[in-house]
Image (tube, rainbow, N blue to C red; front, top):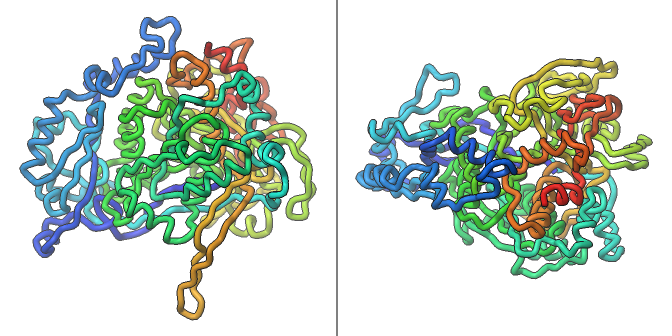
Length: 611
């Protein structure tokens, strides 16, 4: 399933996705619309926070597993209540409401665009390549700020990019629950990655909550229930919970009334997989929607995570959504936050999650090292070292696809040009797991010294030209070194040809002779993508947490350390041949490879190691 990436495509909107802040315009407008933006504060002890986060997962540290609450985080690492109140007092003078999320890191501000213009005096920095918006804050406030997020002068229209990577095979609805699950559902994941041994120990995620982060999307509860019932899983409504971050229930419902949108299918599969793999867990979906475009995609994304983390109910979070890619030239023009500042803001809130014992999973992307078609490699903004980034693989299979005989003998990296249809070749965008090197995050300490990290082997399988890729019939081997955060961390089945079923219902919209027609549809599809694998990993985390006395917390340092031991729960996919994500291959004998990270997970062994 293609990830949802919000890409700025032209002129249009404000401190959200619509409207613009302009002092001159404010004078002409009788009633200025409301808008929401964020001020992200600095940690009072950034170095201490980073060390504490690592110490919570270090068995040799006195702080091992001593996770803290949001209020304790505020006391130790967030800004003081006094500082937060100074922001409240200043903006209150301008009729702007300031709400601090527990932890005292992110402030959510709401006011009219006219009042925001008076309070911050935004101005475009013409010397900036991205025309970044500058603002003015009193000197006693500005030194505490990491970023102001979501403040824009010129409107910037945005859109979701959705391309389902569907399989040619059809769902057989005549099979019983067990066979259906093993063929199309959570049983397939459990069988592939040794989760059944934990089921046999009566571990199913009971007592755990899994948080799903979504922006500009909604779902039908009945669709989730239909999928779970088909797989023989507890489909009680009490397992499905919505948490509204921006718009409430009434406005958010409009998103399912607009037709069967790709974002609805995406979100549905996230919930179906999370609650399917962990049938005893509750799934909380954090819906960050702004139907009237009162908040930007960057604000919605940040606030969805901040709400989930500061509520501190879910010890595992997963997302298949992202506001954009980590490419400075593609960053939203005319915004108050730069790519670097936004990345710092995300890292800070993700550190709060780690300090509280919450594990975060994110899909790596579905087009190899090029989430957006361009010559230079680019990845989703969710490359934080405090997030476990999940890549994709292909399970063994033999069949004819699009008139081509394909045989995959063993699990390998997901990168598929073999089954490409003529339509796919013409479009010039091919499916494969995201992986490579982050452009905004340094190589984290848990990756340093791991064999394969910051070295790579690759094949120039694709050539970029005029907005799309073509297949290179004579690819060359490329060996080299890279730098930055290596992506992904772990991988699992994401190929549509060995994929999973998804169910969604709604109305398909069409225009016939100038009239809008609505047709009720109920769809079962088989598709793939790291959007499936990320919530599955979060569910596996919930199952392990249900059998441990303490939450796992910051997972990455633990699995990278384990990967270098005799009892490693990881299986590296290090083959040089027939094993690539459209560019990066395995490096024979190496523990880490950019096509699949540390490789696949044996959850039974991982659980044993974590005890």
